[in-house]
Length: 268
Ligand code: NAI
Image (cartoon, rainbow, N blue to C red; front, side, top):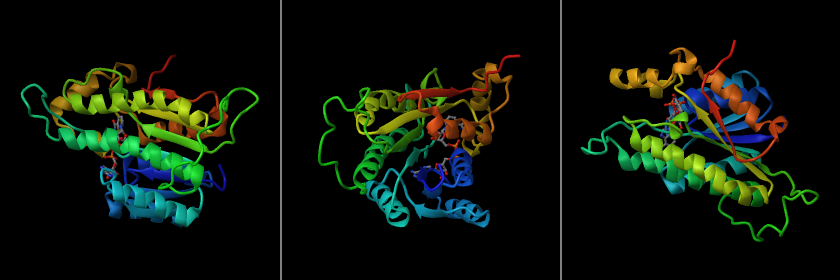
């Protein structure tokens, strides 16, 4: 990974900040893109203080021009994009039937639409050097088949959620958006593989971050109910980031469209 560059959205705290830190320890230059510039700046400063290379960029991923600008700033600073971690996310809560969902549209905008847009920006940057420029040629027929492998261009990793795979009655819009991310990972794997890009989805169970700490008690109880495999314990950001790091490494080139559940299951 040494000498490569990564852009991470939602990197001011939680899983994204830890992924940025872990990548920097591997010699990867990182761009931390977040709506919370103070938090992203603090994480970038911590990485630089430890000898790593990092910049912070203010970016609301739901704003297309800011999203594009973040990728452009990244390319101007590091000149290459090897890993795009589409990690920014928000949680929604509410009863869809009675109409109490607290931020339905915003959740779709951040957790699904911006992720699809991020895949496009990342793929363009990896293929053309500019997130604004579409690749000029479609992949040649047969590219990606044995003996005609396209050149390695990079990896896109979406932080989806285990909640995209099981019912979340208290957060139905969030669950639907995350399920959409998993579906997009599978649908886009072929078109990206033929262009030399791997895509995968990291699907954590409940993890000890600001997002979960902000949940109300009823939600937390419902969350704990789904955590039978972990003995009721929340995952740590480090556990989730380590799994993410493994998906990014060349060592995990065992296939694209990997949808990996990080659920804390264990066997004795
Ligand atoms: P977090 O709240 O610590 O991190 C979310 C990050 O996204 C923050 O840095 C926040 O500032 C940023 N963000 C929010 N809206 C944004 C926007 N519009 N543009 C740019 N940045 C924005 O929470 P956590 O847990 O680290 O979340 C990271 C990802 O992990 C999210 O996609 C979340 O859905 C996912 N996830 C979290 C789980 C958990 O239990 N904590 C479980 C499964 C998935």
